[in-house]
Each structure stands twice: as C-alpha cells, then as structure tokens.
Image (cartoon, rainbow over all chains, first blue to last red; front, side):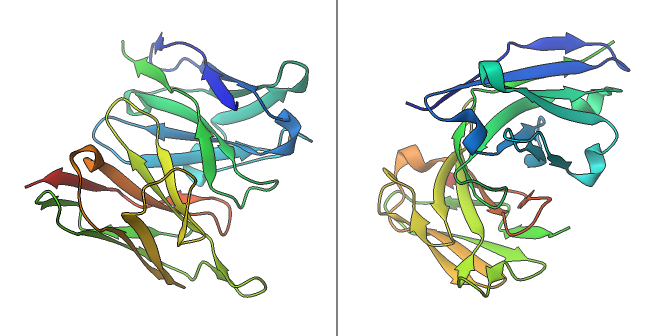
Length: 121
Length: 113
C-alpha cells in the first residue's frame, strides 16, 4: 500500500532553515510527482511546489521562490523540502502529497501525516 | 497565477440536509483537447491530512460516499453533500491542477446546525 512518512516536528529560530523529509513506499517513487503543501494556524491550504522525482525538476509558488529547495534521493525513495530564512509566518504543518498521475497536472491522492514546524525565538 | 475563490467561508447545515459549496476560478480550467476540468475537491478534518474527494470536477475518488458530488465546468464549480452526516464536519478546499503553480481555494468550513 502507498505510504508517505514524514520526519518529526521541528522548532526553529527566526532566520534559520528547516528540512522536512518524506519517505515513500508502496509504489514506484520516480513515476509520480511529489507536491508540498502547508497549513498555517487559522489559514487555508497553501501549495508550495512540486518535484519530479524522475529528473529532479521543480517548480514552486512565487511566494516561496528563492527560499524553498526541493530535492530527492531516489535510492531511498525520499523527497525533501528545505525552507530557509524562516519567520513566525512559516509556523505551519507541512505535508508532502503524491500526484495521482505522471505529471504535475494531477490531484494529490496520498498524503504524508504532516510535519509541524514551529518558528519561535 | 490562477486565483480560486470559494464561497461561503463557512456554513451550518442540519443533519440530513444538503450542503453546497462553490468554487470559482479566475481562468478556465477546462482543457479543450481532452474536455477535462482540472479541478479537485479535498476534505480536511482537524489534525488530519487532506483527503481527495473529487477530481476532474465530478469523478468521485474510490471509497468516497456517493452523497458527495461535484459539478461545473470552465470557471464555476460546486461540491454538494446531499445529506450531511456528522462525520462530514470538516473544511473543504477546491484546487486547480490545470497549470503550475497549482492553487487552492480559501476553504469552506462545514458545521452541523
């Protein structure tokens, strides 16, 4: 069965970076795009970006460009999301989510359990 | 970027009654070459990741109860819960996946009246 297991909660200081991992199992990792989505307190879902695990190509929402880096390690079927220059506005639960098909233009059918990132001085 | 606007922000519906959520896209998400609307609906309950309910605007994901239905085309879409159950209390989001960056609507909170 398809599973996405994310790394544990993090507490970071303003200005720091955080790296969240997402280990996939139960399917061919390189066959499906991986998306990153976050949910901040009192806010709605915010799409951050995607990575094509086959070739490492990425795209991200404009508000994160220059601050987010998405990578993958195909040998261990794991995707990573690195966000730098953290502020309190980045306090949120971060999710990885698999695209249902072979491109970015598919909905997300499987989701990780979420990783809480708290930014506080 | 495609702006997705949901309405209402929240609604309270009696158990067993119909709940209707609207989603409007700033541009059409209908791809003419395959006549598919690149529009999905998700349900999110507190402390849980989102769950895919509907894709291609009207196709129910496997295992989703048939009281959930999606309709619409182009820029205007609707999610309908035909008979609200207690377990349907959640926030519902639409998402366009027609183009990158993908975008979500602001969400609609559904409660029991």
